Amino acid sequence: MISFIDIPENSDFTIYNIPFGIFKKFDSDYTAACTRIGDTIVDLHQCMASGLFSKIALPESIFKTDQLNPFIALGKGVTHAVRTILQDALVTGGGLQQLSKQNKHILIPVDGVHMLLPIHIGDYTDFYSSREHATNVGVMFRDPANALLPNWLHLPVGYHGRASSIVVSGTEIRRPKGQTMPDGATQPVFGPTKQLDFELEMAFVIGKDSTLGQSISVDNAEDYIFGLMLFNDWSARDIQKWEYVPLGPFLAKNFASTLSPWIVTLEALEIFRTPGPEQNPTPLPYLQSKGKNNYDIRLSVDIESENGQSLRVSTSNFKYMYWNMSQQLAHHTVNGCNVRVGDLLASGTISGPTPDSYGSMLEICWKGTKPVEMPDGTQRRFINDGDTVVMRGWCEKDGIRIGFGECDGRIEK
Ligand code: CA
Image (cartoon, rainbow, N blue to C red; front, side, top):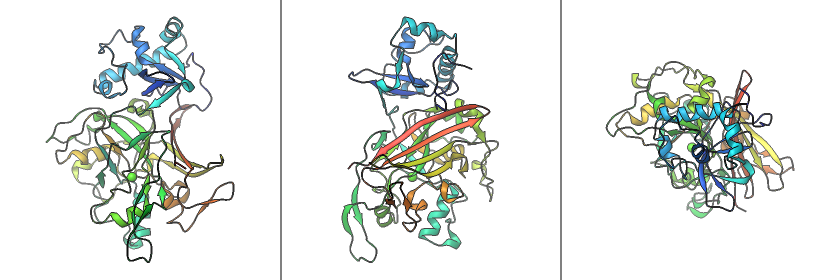
């Protein structure tokens, strides 16, 4: 498939992607649903006004909106049809080549818009599903001989996070203040965190409501998943260390999380399916998943300092996850807990097997004992004020490339 729109080499936004997002025009209150191809935004409301979706029944104004929830809630039958129509219309000679000449509002250069948080997130859950990450943390803080706690290989450990502080890529992050217990001290102190960290994660968006009291089976779980996004689950390690017993993460986690602006659909990711790690011991029957339920998504994390110097601190892959998304969702609902369209479920920090694939500064610098050196000679153990953390994710196979764009957050100076 070749598009009539120019697509830069190594663009995440090829004809095979067709992600969904929400944009706002500069100097205007106009917001609408969109997709992106190359460096061009496609306004779906204008596409609809020009008759592109006339073959499917869509509510009027479904795309003239500041959130995708009502569109996602129409179900995969509709969202997949919209995606296919867009893909067909964007190839050379496709419907949009003519329509976009008649309606000059359909195509917009990407630098003429702001991308907004594309969904209203009702509930956010964070898992802890990377074996390498859980092992590293266990080795650092507990017992190297028993790094994984006894439950870890039997269930996808998770906790309920906070949705109100999830922000879109590009939003500045304020260094959180809180209570910490310095090493050797006997009384806690209050102040800004000295150990601000990122967590490299992927998150998936719920695409269909489930019913309270009913479980989603592991085999049907992907029917409830609309698509994936990049996710930086900012963490304050010193606050976390002092507060987390006995109930787990609280203020060290809920001050901010950064989400990339594009939702890449499961349909687009289909050809990048891959088997997950072997699970031993065999999980209980409700968690047993057959086939290729992991996804080969390459991930990277860069730290950019104020003076524009950049250092790649991690290169990882979503395929390393021990517990896959279907298992996470089956476990989340096995007790009858319901999920709703727009809920966000995050993977937990994604660490690979080698130090260059670790997904947090805590692990990369091994609790501060192995600082990394920026190109300007300054060191980082955690993230400084003025630094920007840039996460990227992309898939490549048989000459087909799709990606997620960037998930960026700068720490306020
Ligand atoms: Ca996390």
